[in-house]
Image (cartoon, rainbow, N blue to C red):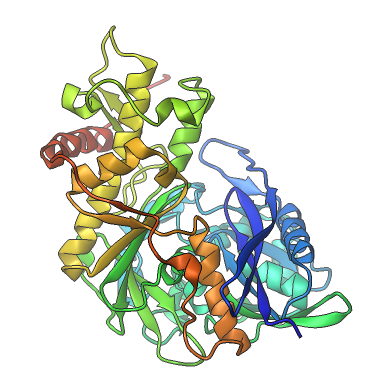
Length: 487
């Protein structure tokens, strides 16, 4: 039997598979892009069958293996019929904002106190619960299926696992992103389920990060799925942040910082920082993390490319002019609102300081700086809560942009380590799978994770510009459309 595992990285914009063996050989096998669907402004969907087909293609392309590990998008949700296994509506993606009015009503009723206390999460459309409720109310046939006991409702990986193995399960990290799980007990919370009017009995069973999630037939034999995890937690594990105080920033579609908090569950609500589950391995105690995110990072770069501000990524690797913010040109990347520490979906994307002499390059420069400055705000909130960190690693697509990386180091006045492997999320998922399969008894020390490829150090102090950015953030939060607009 081959002493290797298959890793499936099911991300927002694509699905990839890798193999990882106990010697540390880590190889990409297959990659498949997937479509985003935008039915209305603020709505973001995907085709569940396309996602599942991509997962299957990626697994099959990897060949034979001892076991499989899967990481997922986190807060993306799907509803399906338990008898046919067919989805009854598109997947609602984590970026979706359709439940904003529902969230506003719950906040007005004082419900956020409960979600913060039990789930560690503020009320926001980002998290799964309100999207799950929307599916119950609006997906065709959902009410009938619920009455017949056939409705299945879960995060995206629970749908994949159901179709691949027949098991109706989720893992503790993904459940911690729903606003329905009690962080202390790691079980579905009856009061939270009642708040969102979701029957607790139709939710999947919660398992540890490494566990038996069922088997699928591959190459004539049954291959067990032995780990399931949210992509951000997988990245934390992939970075080797096993100890309390070690942290990472992943700058992909969004930017997400996660810091290992050990066995401590932080509950400082004023910080805007979230508490979440980092992982639970092989039945051991739960490891917690603190978490903060920026909704729009790499997606802002894609957005400005679609606007025609640049054609090739090499055009925005460097700029001839000084930092845009030093010339009073500022961009706030609140294109989907503001996450940590504000949690303000009413905030809007904003350029300030443009003039007739402003160029496309200036605008691109300001966008990159805005993403870095928002990331700095998140890191500040986390550092204020958790104190000094032993290390901070960074990965994601934007780490390939030299200007962005240097500006981030200069504006935060911190060093960042970029690991050798560019596929750090998948590497973490593979480590979980090696542990869950029994091929590794302790966390494997894999050569792909060290030595670091790059250490980013500050070359100048740009921290003084953060106060100007704070002022721009205030502006983007105060934009209100008059009620009389449009008559």
